[in-house]
Length: 44
Image (tube, rainbow, N blue to C red; front, side, top):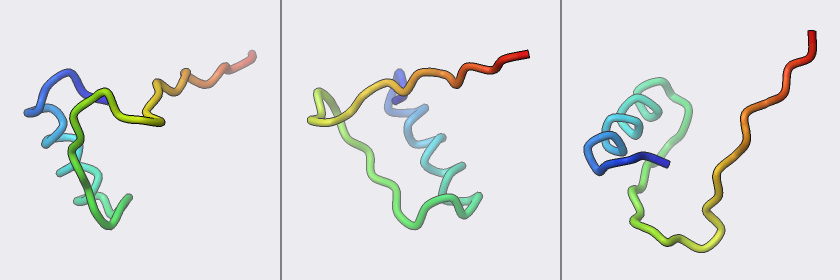
């Protein structure tokens, strides 16, 4: 999730340019099923 439309476009451009995804869509919330994914826990 991005804080602005401009940053959403930037992230979409980066993802599609890196070959990570085939299509990119920008949605405005609230969007059913959208959630913040917690950072992975790393143990030392």
